[in-house]
Image 1 (cartoon, rainbow, N blue to C red):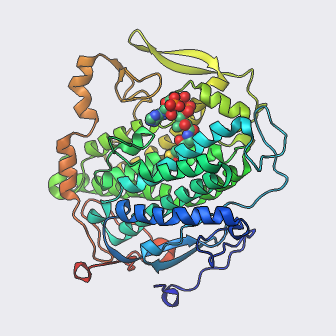
Image 2: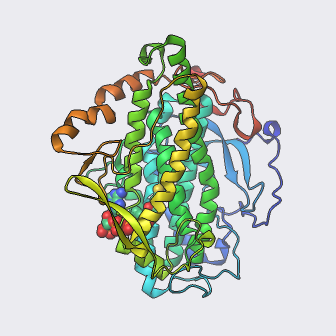
Image 3: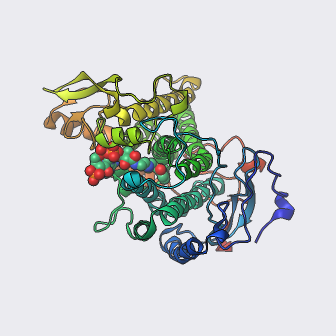
Length: 492
Ligand code: BYC
């Protein structure tokens, strides 16, 4: 069911155009109908994807959801909004426009034409990167499967589902690359992307954060802030890749990703606004009894999600990362804006490490520390976000603040793994850590108390007690718009 009559027609795209062909079974702008073998292979994967979506996609039954769908990849007007049954969402393959002049901008192939095919010598690395990236997309849908049952509003429910369908589309983006460029091995990897599952003891997802449970909406907002933001930075580096189809795929994924960032930033923001308001009104930090989430619990969730997301950058020093750079398969964040030689053979940088119970610094070759380079960009971005959230406390005249924990806090990957570091950056022994960890990470009781507040609010325009309403709706619709029609009318 489409509701064009009510929502108005989609705006006409005005940017550079590559219209997406929706008459095909798999919408695409890659001329899929000109390559019958590839088309058939992807059409063979499509029902498996739909089965996976049915089994592990959103659990809450809905009639339809006000979703945006890509209609062109140009700068403006690329999306169309309408009420659609979620299982009929048109997952497709959309690559940003090709620039025929594009050259490799870094590494040993710098200045050579970008690759339109996979060079044999870089095949294994590219395959690995695409599989790791692809694995995270369905993982997040699995992690968020049951959140619809406890949504704080219909507006938030719609945003959750938008994120979910787009993560599904990002899986399609990677599966297209696997099928189109990696032959039988690629097709096998594409099958595996639906067989590994988040938290599955026998066949888990590849990266740590994607096997954690997303227990509630506080965690979801922290996930879309901190973990989706890792996605933004990783996609930003793959967008620089010499392998042009990967670069163009990631460029378009980043456009969709912006909304996921928005969901996290404003979700935490609205929660913090309510917390500050209730703290001020009742002059207490103990605000669970007033239906809001205490600041110290928000801080613990933040600590946890920041640390697992920091782990996603891999080890600070990584020969993988150096090789990816030199060979041209993965660049740096904003590669073209960097004012250096883009080869980095001579460059060095400082890096923290732990020795004899303290954090020390040493100088290392830049090429070996590119995961850290990217992570630093990410941390600067997160620092900015936390500062903005803190305005809610400043404006309420409260002294309390959220903080971003130290980079070494609760880490499982890299130089801090195997050490205990407090959020303030002190190295602790086992005993001191065990005594304090409960102050810094969510306990089972914290999660239970948060869960008790997660009562679904499905009345249009109403919001759960623990979160402030947004300032505006989606696509210029009012906040109280009927963004989602649930399957059971009785619930409305
Ligand atoms: N958990 O040399 P190292 C997103 C493994 S999120 C478990 O330091 P490297 C999204 C590593 O695989 C972005 N294992 O690693 C967000 C390696 O294993 P092998 C996803 C880990 O290669 C929200 C070994 O440790 N995209 O899009 O330099 C919703 C040695 O590590 C972890 C990407 O990540 C971990 N956290 O860097 C939806 C981009 N970290 O080979 C979506 C593609 C490391 O020795 N991936 N290991 O068996 C990459 O660029 C790199 O693979 C990594 C790791 C940055 C992840």
